[in-house]
Image 1: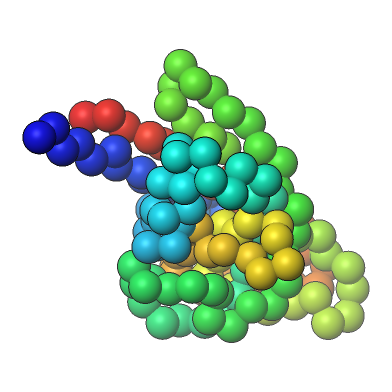
Image 2: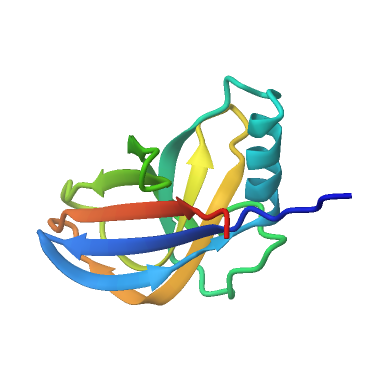
Length: 147
């Protein structure tokens, strides 16, 4: 019996006001790996990763995570697929919108845009202080490797 694994690897780049402040690897969680398997098998074809969330939780990212620990806000993510490079790049901007939009951001997640979102990937990182007028952009690259 042939048994193969398709590794999924993610990496985030976090910018504040156009300046890169963090680059970190992420964890594709169990629900995310299951979501990928369902998509390959033709199930749940309408579910797409459309959202990115940020939060202030500090619990270490674990395979069993099903959401962002302490969610602050979500943004719609744009998607670019490069089949030759075996990458999918998601990008979302969290704008500075004045009062109440500041946070000590320590976690981020990729989510489907369904009524009950599925967490596909999550990462925890050293604090990035987002003030109320700061624009935070996260570029999240998922690489699929056959080796």
